[in-house]
Image 1 (cartoon, protein in one colour):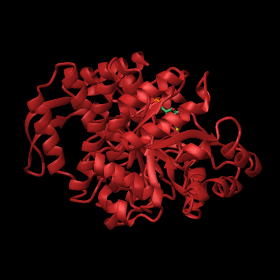
Image 2 (cartoon, protein in one colour):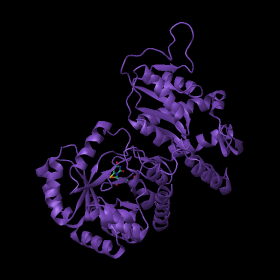
Image 3 (tube, protein in one colour):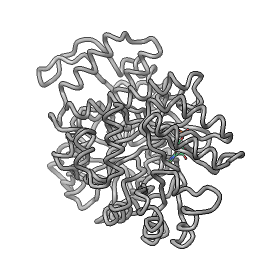
Image 4 (spheres, protein in one colour):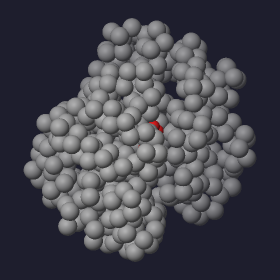
Length: 479
Ligand code: S5P
């Protein structure tokens, strides 16, 4: 894990050293003075950086799980990048001309393709998303589909949302906030420059006052709805309670306490309780489980005002999960306000869990997307999960997800795989920062495990995550 993080840190520092990223005062084409400037054209002079760019972009492409037949770079900077990716990974490439030739074929797209082929667009930096869109439009004119794009650096000025509105999902290797926080952490950049640049980006977004958090499916009313408003307007009483807690305690943090010893679990709950809206458990990890633990857990939930989420991820036929939820050793429904389920068995799983949970006022989250590399949740699968959730809102209260899936305010979006230090673990877990989870991915609640539980001072780490998550939420309100 540390290796991956260092890799990205070194890469960002390298871009800074070769002046692909510069800080100062730069006059942009628009006449605006910018404190930051990206000139990724220089990377062609550094073959080692070129190679690393292609590798990092390929890793991000694989992580995204998107499917395509060919790759096309936005001219000109991304052309050599696309070439490297294609050659290294044996993918066919297409080239988009900027102007049609006035002789010969007059084609705007060079290379072999058939109607309906899907092409991935590659870009170096995205600001408003317009250059990716132009390339996509040229491809679409030739009946080539474009559903996804990958960018090395997202300036976070609204391009991602603009592209989503145009039906293109954008994945990035790094974001401007990440560049700023890494260079600051490694003592390459003063706080004053970080603050100035952050402010500039905020003031110069291409999506105006709307919230970048939200994908195109969201209504504008929902875009600015605070926790307080949701605590009144949401239909499900459990969702209203959760938003009330979030508003009162000013937190959108759920801590995942994944330990094997009851005493350790309860001690950790005591530490994090005052700062969280939810505590997530994997009760079957405990080697010394007794009902005393769940009794204590409920007492702590009352004392510190949080809800309990048992991350059981039910995934069997209705009859089986109903029994598992209600009974067995753990009697989950009797103490966990919220649990979750994989939708893979079909709607019977929801009906069976609802039969047990609804009379008790419980709620269930559907696992729509996962944080782990190589997971099998395709976009079609996720779309079907959304349908299933929307059809069962009397019991399904939201999603475990990695992106904003639904415009419906009754369906709360909870995102795991969150850590201030990005990267992953050796078993495929992939992390984004609290800011990325809330602002880019539209999380209502961030789920943090080892970022807090494995910290040397978990109470302090909880405060840090609480602040990072909540500040990010406030930013989405103030846009
Ligand atoms: O996609 C997922 C879904 C879940 S619920 N990815 C996850 O990591 N989780 C859970 O979130 C996982 O089971 C673990 O309990 C927690 C993440 O822990 P961390 O230590 O990696 O932050």
